[in-house]
Image (cartoon, rainbow, N blue to C red; front, side):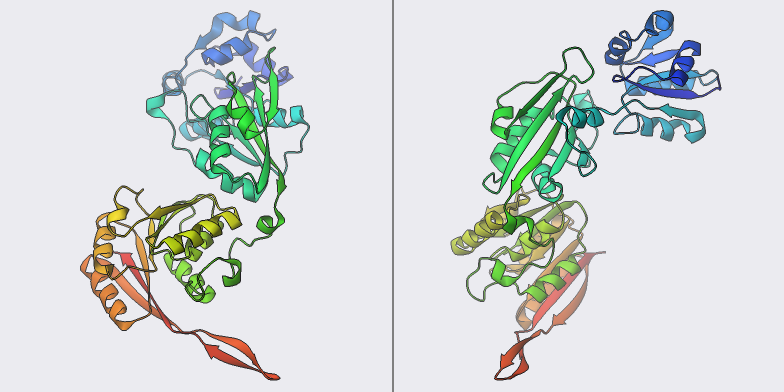
Length: 419
């Protein structure tokens, strides 16, 4: 037995020959309290139980291993240690040469087998932030990301925990997801591999009213999607596909350039100030389910267009904010990017407010030289490096038996980048 850390997955199958040999010969076997109870059901437990050390905290476990590097050790992990498990952390701590992984089945793999669904087309996510409320891991996805993710993937598997539990997830889905567009089927797979294993199937409303034992995993499946939504592009919405007052919409070509100038992150917060019909907001929202857009607008008619576009497209990551900037911006989550399509004559005040929260990039659309002048002066005053593009678009139009080009009003796209 080499002087290594052997990470052995348990919980779902009998140990293979190599895992048994390592456990029987290990000077020390480390396990959490839950995995100690799981391991107690294995026949090898009786032989080695005096060498099992229970440590319930991962940081304490790593400290113990570092203090005992002079001898080999076995650490018991749940399922596949490299599937949202401890394996990655241990390799980072001790190096690839010092760690050997012997996996069991993953809980997700077993869950799909229980509900008899293929899992090669599923999206996998972990909402398991850890047992300590004060030291919860920052997760790449949150519950609020699920509706947008299910639109893209149709099938999602989730590792849950006591905080992000199936009932809480289902309650969010039943209130935040427009269920007239998509019929969802939820599966909760409780205590897989235990004698009291249970599989529950239901709608978001049904699952939200239940309680479940730990550990459990959740699978969400979109059973039926409205074709008008599922066929929508992730980028390239047409003006005629969006509700708007005639002519009052950011034209397709301008919208594409403006969004390009924003250099959107994959995940983050975007403010769309003076959102109008919401064309920029919904186009950004379609690009990434982990971009959360706040469409800020004061006009009631325009607000109705925004809401209609959100509903028509099944958008779940745009929040409509009624009010006038800059006052209405107070208290909103801080943005990574800001687009200003309309300012109501208060552009300088808005830029000042945005500059105080250190938004990385601001893009402003202007149709007059006066607005251009105000935008440049304001952005420079508050420490932004400014660039301007004049966008002149002409569209083909039939004329008798020929085609000619008809010019649209030029638009000035101003970008400020924080220096």
